[in-house]
Length: 66
Image 1: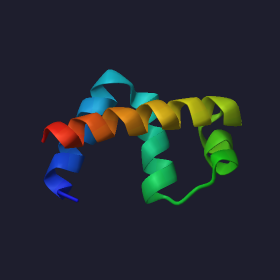
Image 2: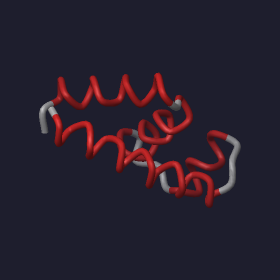
Image 3: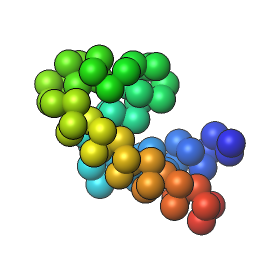
């Protein structure tokens, strides 16, 4: 993975939706489960799953274009 492109994509995501970026940080880099992430950010597990899915799609598209 191109870490520079990943960092740029995460910054773009954070500018668009800080909650999704935080979920990516906690899930991917922090290794938290959906339930742990939900508790950490104060939302339901379903919301975490939804944001996680959208964030992964955003990052995949951004990295594919890099």
